[in-house]
Length: 512
Image (cartoon, rainbow, N blue to C red):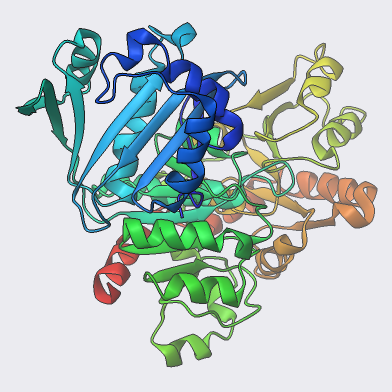
């Protein structure tokens, strides 16, 4: 069914499957004489005819997809389509009509480049074609700009083609938003970077479009299933069609909302790897990753019976390249403190901590570098609240996190992947927790004498502040600081994402 089509998100556009409600715009664009004069059937169309085609032809066609493009401002930008002869075809034809008011702004190129990527990575096509009337100078010039070359001619039309073939892709399923933060997505982006280094840039699949901008900023292709991120079985009809068409080499899932039924459906179509933190079930997968410091202590023996490959422990911590091969640190006193809260800060830890610590004479003269996550809802208020405090530096959209970690002498951080980044940098850290999934690592880091735990701020934030202050005093001693930084760097070497990327390709190669 043509209605089972994911949305495509680009830098400025969101392409969603056409609906009946799009009919008036499509009919208006298609009925412009300057447009239809170059069509195979050079006549205007009416709404009734379009809707009949939509209901009785388009929705029944498995080999055609048409998207309505929308700008970030909610303006309809045009209709863009692909079609092929049958599912086995290695060539597909592209077509488009751009809204007249948006011509000359690069929107058509942006959308067509996304469709070419979709054809390659989600339909497995080797070539893309466009049939253009020989007198349509504007479309010919456009095709040339897309590096399409004339290949054949018939009945006044010239077929332009472009080679687009790529190796079988890797698909990564992850989400990020204000409710769950960006941790799952960020660790998957680290793996994606390493896959790209290996010549295999992945396709990201999300439940909704909340994280699409972040994926785009990192240069990866993003598809949205347009279903609730926390009800993953609802996306299976669309996802299964995407998997059958794209035939990926391997599928990596990173979400706490997967179910056995979901992974069973995916595993039936593609080699599947799951990023696990909780060890709550035995899933039908070919590989399992738990890079947490306690990962190797959990009982995964049932997976060994199935032949699944296990990637366990901090050696597989999926950090960005900037966290590898960092030199040992030398103590020079506590002057700068890094404060992080993850992708979001629902309890306003950073604001409340700063208000508390600025009232303490022993700590108020330090510099505090506070990283506000992408989904931090308090950012504007915090900037206003601390605008007159020269020692408070509020940072957002940080792209060089390791530089700040190495610059700072001490860190106060929420649990999660950030702790492993701090280990790689050798930055002595005090941790706190604000989510259940952070508790296991918090206990393990604390029990192993690596990162003291100030408690769960959901229970008693004021007590967490008192613990943080005591630990700041303790870590000010040179001997304690030096022992801690050396111990942290022995735990994480920063190369885990590369190990995972290679393992994914090996699992896909063995099972595919």
